[in-house]
Image (cartoon, rainbow over all chains, first blue to last red; front, side, top):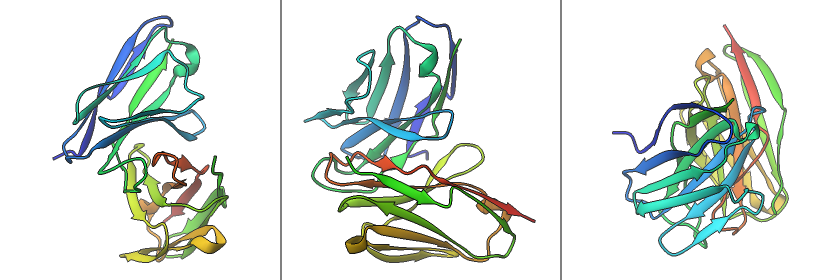
Length: 115
Length: 109
């Protein structure tokens, strides 16, 4: 009964390609997030999204875009992949979002390697 | 935005020892969480603790919000406690957590 799941677990691709990472949560949460963990283990928020509001970290390139087909899913699309995009991407969810602090639960991560 | 700093950056313990990890933050918080990232990379929730004290088995945490720090206590450490411990906080910025740099813990048998 995985609470937050991500696919694929590993993704190896060539520079310049477009790729997507999928995230699903079965917790009934309203808000989902994407975080990036670089090679030095530093974790950084990329997006916060619920059906009312998308909040984007200003440092995220516009090649990255979240897409949510429904409340339980938040996919991450990356266009024109660059070497520096290689990282581990974590999806997370919480019961509520902006304006109301709640525990965030994280998925297992997707390890992206751009060659 | 909020700044989150953790200390020490690295810690080596003998099995059975106790330890205290510290997290300092630069602003008032409405969300503070402690995570353990195990050697397989999985991020595991330990505590949601914007204030007060909580205990879960050998682990406990205390956040003194007025003084802008949180402490994670590990007692009777085990080799399975090895990994990276992260503190993360939000100060009303859309519940978007800012992570500290982590404390890398190695527990030796």
